[in-house]
Image (cartoon, rainbow, N blue to C red; front, side, top):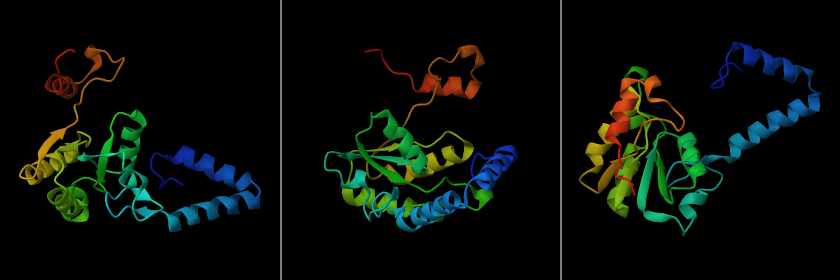
Length: 185
């Protein structure tokens, strides 16, 4: 249980003890549901988001704006952006970020598929929505250089969370907030 993301030793112990107390039929049903999901869910052939179909619901949707592609590190980021209900374009899921220390280079990600997709579909804009970690910045800069010959490349703004105080923000967050500023409407 501790191997699951975000699950520490205490939570893992709590989960294990909970499962041991449940009736065997419930535990078997949970195990079967996990196995079934693992068998049925794959990656969209277009954007590499999780999907039970060869082409995901977002890519199949004719109402989505094909003139923009939002590049994210993984499906969790795509889901977070979808929850905002603000972005109406298409996506591309990289499957991670470049991290030489972890042995992850562009070859382990869907970078080549992205370049082929952009050169073929010719979107008006590619939005890089990758977290501003060291690895995320490396990935963003790398993709920006590769994609600029094909289309306009932008990145999402970073800054202060709603309700956050300036005095508690670190220097990098404040710098990003200043860089991402825009004119008042």
